[in-house]
Length: 144
Image (cartoon, rainbow, N blue to C red; front, side, top):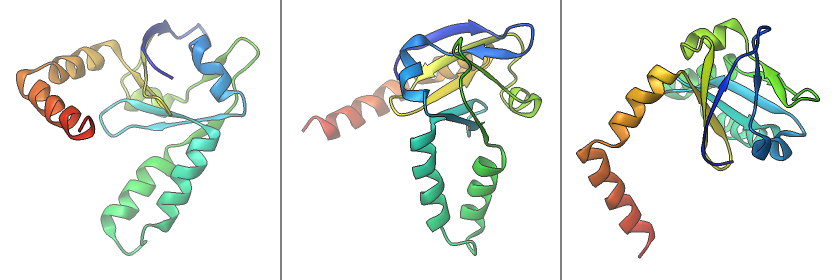
């Protein structure tokens, strides 16, 4: 799952997901709150690994408990309908400030759902000179 895709919610609040993503989502998907004011979407098999990792975190660690509560507590499991659509809850839409339009960003093994306004802000941050320098440093570490 890669690329930037722009879609609109239909009149029933359903979101059509990119055709290129659908094969990976055929066995189910999970959409939950994202940490940056977006939503995270996972193929079910990837989400099961996320849940397993979260289950390994100590419940006595307040940061670990908060992360698990945030991600698992906001999770919506579902399937795509025959047209490749999924429905988002009002709580998820509110978290990401999504109203009518959605920017879908492919992140290889997951995807993100952004409101156009928040995506514009994030893209500006990502293209700032400091972010560019940080990205160059990271690229150099894994291209060695």
